[in-house]
Image (tube, rainbow, N blue to C red; front, top):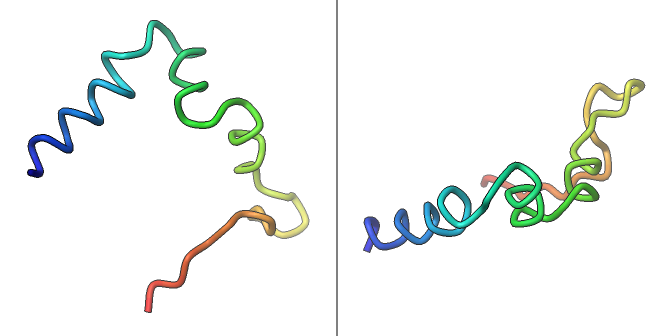
Length: 54
């Protein structure tokens, strides 16, 4: 199962894209990338969706 999941990941994000623009589109586009940028006042992105680890 793990090997199948890893192969699916490789097909989608590594072998399945022609270039960086294709990769960026596969992971959510430039809007998603912009949402990860840190706010200089906070030092992190306060709007980033986070999950609890406990």
